Image (cartoon, rainbow, N blue to C red; front, side):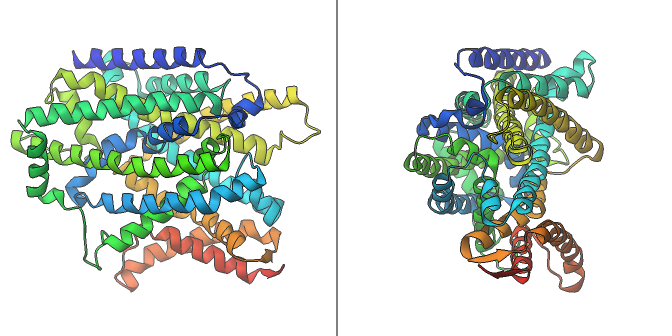
Length: 481
């Protein structure tokens, strides 16, 4: 019965989303696809960005994390808030002053064409792998719960999800996504509240009982003050702040939505409100995790090896009852599509504008539209290829994998932007691609050798080390402006 409920919910939601986009009037030109005419309401953008940044991974991975790390992930979330403040008052004024379509155009103006292409290339690598990892986990969950019992292969699920995203983003791009993200965020939040209500009812807990259960649970620990631990507060806070700066402020995906607002002031209000709202949402996911593990241990249910399989397993097995199946499916589908659709659109935008330069004055508009359509289809195929790699390799906790990948791929971007913003020196443009490649390789070697030579285990601070190495190398190959 649960399998048919999942399949029905998945089909219902995808049809609803495609129909919803039919009512969003879009010109379908490149201005609408790339910038939404710079007319998006800031409040709508802020609400929609919650779902886009959280993704389906957070709904299953963050609750699964509490078994090993407790609720210490909240320390990183506090760092997220500090990062959003930096984005709002340092990066957004720069982007709006230069009236950028893609934020990597700044590197062209500051350093040169090769630096521009380097920044765009690292974004493509970062966003493609991160978004594909998120979508992979969601496809696995949906396939195991709904598609596999029908005898269909995993690739059918992947193809169906990617085709749905492609169809409702192909014409309107970011103009459609600003509105569909708001719908998907609403569905995600409703689903999460339903899960909390169902699990607390299974445990016979009132709201005060939930708080008491968390306080008494060893998984309820929120702050760690042991300076030698990878969960140390200051370490997690700083990591969270810089992860937010690079995965939001230096990410075309998230900034493309902000750049559709009518003014800098509205974009700043959007970013600050979004930063405040992300705290209680992530706290809610951590509460779900503690309640799920408490319920599983109380019922004597064997725990899965990977934490992010716990919630899907409990839903699929019927342990939480059939009432939770429909909202869970809607929630994880909404979160997954909200993250993947904006990633696909931003990748298309960056390739078209940064690499193919379709907005040059000498570029025919009809030809530019045709190029955009072909690039958008190619990006969808690239998603399928990356998901295939994740499926072959397997994975642990996906959200941890995403943050570790970010340390290698976003580090050079952070170093480039910091050098451009905080120095007046001019870099030798032709050496920038080599610096951006060598720096992550050095970080990988240090990550491998550190436990052996210094008994130190790097966490997400690899991002900062990578950025520092990039910054110092740029300084070595620069001269006074």
